[in-house]
Amino acid sequence: MARIVQKFGGTSVADLDRIRNVAERVKREVDAGNQVATVVSAMAGTTNQLAAWCQEIGPLVDAREQDAVVASGEQITAGLLAMMLQTMGVNARSWLGWQIPLRTDGTHSKARIETIETDDMIAHLGKGQVAIVAGFQGIGPNGRITTLGRGGSDTSAVALAAALDADRCDIYTDVEGVYTTDPRIVSGATKIDRITYEEMLEMASQGAKVLQTRSVAMAMQHHVRLQVLSSFVDQPGTLVVDEDEIVEQKIVSGIAYSPDEAKITLLGVPDRPGVAASIFGPLADAAVNVDMIVQNISHEDQSTDMTFTVGKADLDRAMSVLDGLKDELGHDGVQAETNVTKVSVVGVGMRSQPGVAKTMFETLADKGINIEVISTSEIKVSVLIGGDYTELAVRALHTAYGLDAEPSD
Ligand code: ADP
Ligand code: ASP
Ligand code: MG
Image 1 (cartoon, protein in one colour):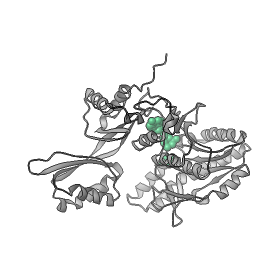
Image 2 (spheres, rainbow, N blue to C red):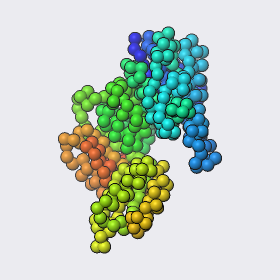
Image 3 (cartoon, rainbow, N blue to C red):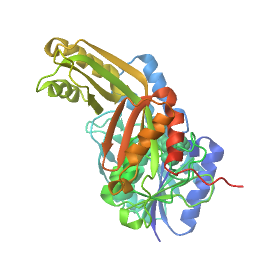
Image 4 (cartoon, protein in one colour):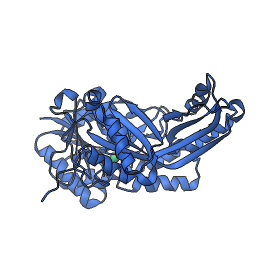
């Protein structure tokens, strides 16, 4: 007998037929004698709709109330799945975040999980009852409902798997696993059988939304055995594993892209010691996450242009911080550009193999794509390019690194 945590995403619970399909999968695990906790997302599109209603009321609505609204989608699917299982003769009940309780900090809309009390749930699992858990939600320090950021049900599942000391955490979604790149934009993308935690973390944080970044970090930290697989076909998915569990390592494992970036250029910044600190300090204080940074060479008048990227969602906040720095910094002006995409190639093999960046730059040059900013880490190279070139760049890089699937005949 194993203890299993499963998670089903929005497309997998999009209507009652699909919820029935999910219930059949849950029942299969129960019939095999396993203890099962199943985390569910809201029906596809529901969270977007709920968030849009909140935004329609105003851009600065009470974040606590907004969380109360957007968390409700998962309450619906948890109840529906529990009822569906009951009609199949399976003992099941729903658990909302506060009922577990799954406690978070008070950062509404992107709360972090602090503790999960599992005694009660373990007692129910021990009596053969399936726990259907509403993903994405928790309870904050003041007893208010919190949510974990978009895609947060993945993190609910991994955190629950760690807390329950589960044998497996299976993330069921609408593709058959983690692919070399988003299979929705590159038809030749191939499914990866095994990917390291580290690579998955980079892929997710660079835009591959198949897993929420935080869920991967948590799985890595707590050694959760994580699998991504399809809720529609019975095929093995992708296992996220330690590096020593991979026999043959490719140099580049995957390509991710993120259109959620914005580029800011500060023009005519005085070129003197301390200037970077006086720009990025206040941005950090305003909780603006700065990603790529490039400082141009000095002009003759001892001034320089500074270009960096922030998340699109943080752009307005960043611009108002920079506005407030105008007198102190004495720069000539600020430009913002939102039609940009960050494209990243990821692979642990890069550590020992030079030339990955060269291939990337040459491939993009061949396609006439201009690189605006570059950043690298040990296992990743990222470039910022014009948003209109996203698909062209991802496809060309996918081919250049030999990741295209063999054509089937
Ligand atoms: P769910 O609702 O099940 O959580 P998501 O929409 O959040 O599903 O994530 C699955 C989607 O992630 C896929 O439909 C796919 O378009 C996208 N995706 C992006 N990059 C990748 C990748 N490298 N491998 C697989 N899917 C990816
Ligand atoms: N329903 C939430 C969202 O759409 C959480 C999730 O699906 O993981 O972001
Ligand atoms: Mg998701």
